[in-house]
Length: 248
Image (cartoon, rainbow, N blue to C red):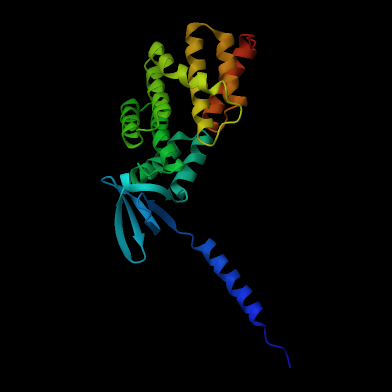
């Protein structure tokens, strides 16, 4: 007769099944400042509140009461970011916009990045008024992200050929980045954008060696935003191959 499984075997099997289930059905979570934790499905942000479905019930938690939020980036964001990194701004726009329309203000790295990126996507498509609106809404939704807001405003200034204003906004960020060799996630993209824009400004001033150094900083050090890296590499190649510029 075949021996039945021991109690230990059953316990191990049940724990394994539970672990698999926890990965398969990972839930979003919001921890409030009073310590209350809510787990379920975060549906979006509206009127300053996080909408979350806990079991069959939908409820709301005020954004200013959220101490931390856990939610994986939605497919609209990952697909939109992939399109942006591949240089396809037109494909990225509806995906990033959908993400921002649903989750703007959510305190997660991907929601903040999407909100900042939307203005960049609009600028790449020469939709300047829409970009201005997107950057203004980003500032309102993420008031603590001062540096990222300054980069957005600098991009607008560069687009309008207001290089002096753009340079003033970028100089503190570039100075901060010069002491960094390995930037944390999110900041690498920000620093790369700052160096690229500073390179454009230095080119406008005729300071080509410094412009080349800025472009190469984006390409070799702060390459998280692949779309910006591609632009920086293109400008660096032109300076080196066509104008025989060398790094100072």
